[in-house]
Length: 604
Image (tube, rainbow, N blue to C red; front, side, top):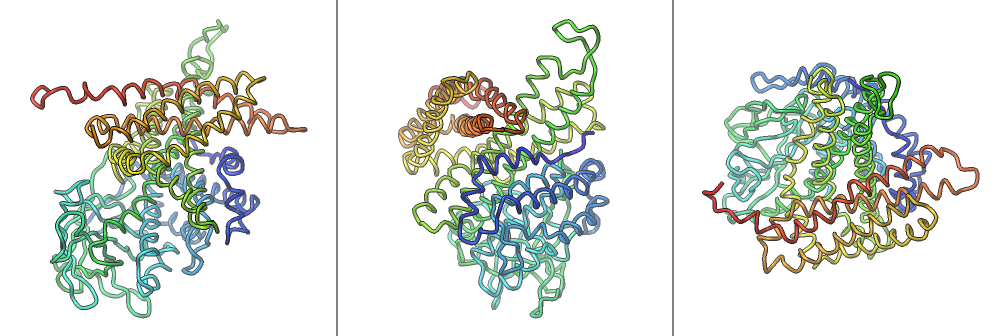
């Protein structure tokens, strides 16, 4: 199975030329975030990811987690790796210094997290969930709750979880039944949650569950949901751990992938702890605003899952590339004297270029969203904060939905490059596809992301934010027209980008116009619209990358010419083979609802 090597050169290119590291370093509180500091952080994290996390990826998948009498054991080596993770300060990277964090911006944390996820996705899910819980407590918790829970959670000695799904509810949270009964300064929680990632494990001293539940007099539906902190172990006044709470892991799931990440069935109540009947929980914020608060965690988690799509794609590409270079089979079509490495075969080249170009597009898009997240939070000018915040809101479902669906395609292509050996588990190629498959489901399926995109992000404002992004794309198109007058690659990219932006703009207008008059037709095309949004925004970023590379090559005494030429060729491939799909997607989005909805239920 292939080794993982952090793609530091491409990460640094995206950060410095596309991802906005310069603008972020000028924000209040970010003066110390220099290119030199970021380079040091990334290089150190690369060593940890490559040497500690990556070697556990395959063995952890084979061994999996074990459940016994409510306790969960993670695979061999995971606990020691997590201890190194905490000791290195990695969990604290992006959190406020007030509670022990390092206060680095999201644009720095994003490539760091990408490396963890590429090296070992199952391991990375534990800090992912903790980060979401920390964000929710930071924004909604009382000072007492922040002081009680955040320092250890940010350090990483305690972890966090999200408890939404119930057996009868699935993605429809209006149907949840877990109840919370008031008792003095706390509540007693009773109910069952399923699909709880790292709901039980042997990595941390305590687990802080964030649980959605209903109070006795709550209104029906999603308006009656509240959010509670429910610790595995109670926390004493002096910060030490006290009695075991009435919360128990009833079982863990047997899954297609991410075997080394325990997915738990959690039971709250049942008099299994040391605190009496019902798990003790503490209200976060106000009653009946839990879903609103949970979306704080959800947005952070959705971005992180989009990064998983990128990360798995990078790992699958690296393994496929290494195999294609070393596997000797068949003569090339030009008539070689003997057998050649399969990377010389045109169709293998096509597959590798498909993988490479989509990885680079996903990375550029995600890092750009990370930079805008920092600007939306820290910029001194309120107008700029709002503009970037709106951009982030628009892009989150695209980063999550498009990147994860693309990861499934890229990982599957990786198996195809391997041929029959890719179907054999011992090569490791199949693990990437199995692990990637869940990413398009959890934290909201692709359809949920698409519904969010067309409803909350396009129809609500008549497509105003999207049209602002389209204006930025047209500006890139104009730059390409000028630079491409004497460059065939840039001219080709410009033509494909122009057509893609036109196709997306037509669909944005169509969604905004038809959402209230023919909502069924709009929803029928929602997932293709999300894919169109992904390939066009990704194509825009690839076009920007080509322009940046072109500028570097034109500079006096240019170095690293091979890297920059590869950037331009890869952007052209994306334009001609991926972005070229935009016209067909536009047709199916605007005209395809009749055949989707044409059969009666009993005709299927």
